[in-house]
Amino acid sequence: MLRTADIHIRIDPETKSSAEQIYSAFGLTLSDAITIFLRQSIFTGGLPFELRQKRYNDETEAAIKEANDIIAGKIKTKNFTTLNEFYKDLEGENEDVEI
Figure 1: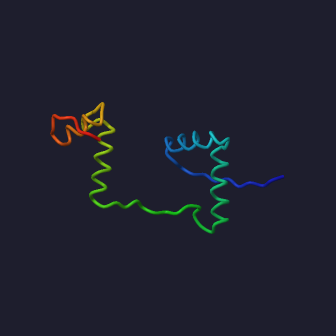
Figure 2: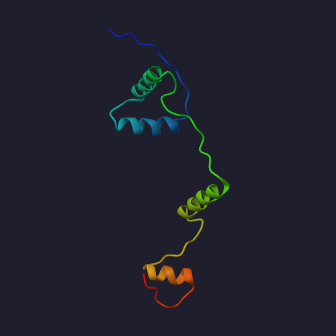
Figure 3: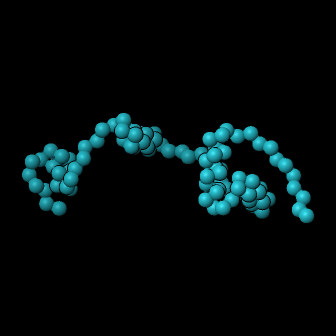
């Protein structure tokens, strides 16, 4: 018979629920996933993934924020049905642009 030990952790309910949904898609319980994490930690001799903080320059950070604002509908964008419409707007021209 396998002997087990209990681990008690506190985690916010939203994180727990989200993790359970992910792991259940693989047929795993949260307990199974934690066991896999711990065994992989032992196997690799540390955390089983690389820890690093994403770092971007100011221009990239601004572009990411702008893209997220566009997705969220906070910034309205122009829509074009053809590439020629786009080029006309870009060039400020009224003539067809050959591609």
